[in-house]
Image (cartoon, rainbow, N blue to C red; front, side, top):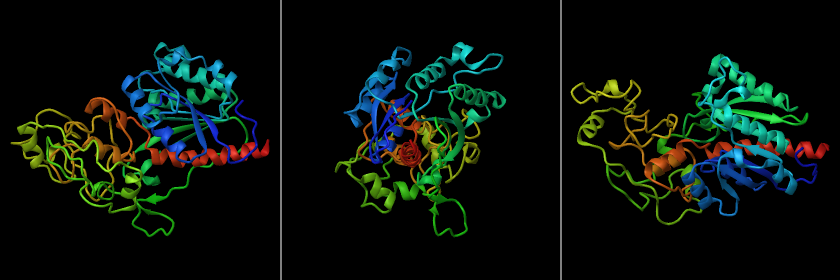
Length: 374
């Protein structure tokens, strides 16, 4: 059952399941209080990206069903499990969760928690988890972990509240093995017109991207446009290489370029004059972002203009891989592996590292109090 250590300032052992490119890992390890002893993902390019950035962390590229979690606990105590299986692939309509064959990934996550017995786990998922199957899915998830004698809290957090230049709401299910109180990280930013001495305004695309070259379509640049203009840009460029990476744009066709040329800032498909308006797509397709507002939620398709709002406010093209990474708070030194589409997938599916770091600080407070009381 986790660790019985009471010495403070130790490093806590973490297992990162469904780790992706490592947004949660980076946030937790940035605190210097966690050591990731195992990461797992089934996607090859994800694992290669992860290894590029965390070369000392063991990562297994295999289906989670092949992992013997009992063997892990023989070697070391596990204090924290982070990550969570995708819930979009199944429904519990008419079936209990662990009896639904489509729920195999969640069954494996349940098996991991049952075997590893961490002091705390943090399970991240999309906002839709709260309403899926009329709210019965999240209820059943809570009941399952309660059966393992964990108390369970469910929180909806917005990354913009914690210094990420993006409106991104995600669900965090937190499981606790003892009675110590888990305190959510305090918000550092806000979207209020009222002055708040203790918070700053939400960060915008301008705050995040104004030092990057605004390259046209089908172009690339390895040089920064200017020196860092904001504290956020300074943070993103800390320990980065001299040359800028991943600042290359896709090649859009003539008709699409004409459509984007007639798309106003903040506009959607309906705002394009009919003669240039694409016939395909949904009402929220072909959306241009705002320069002086946070980004809307970055998805895996942020390099595709016909997807959700992802067109650059100042240039007639979709966001580049580096711009998407900036809006997700990945530092410029962070590397991605694979095709442009695979790199964008890695970024769009990740937990923003800055948000992960704030959650990690709350986990530290919980663990330190727990072990002090042991």
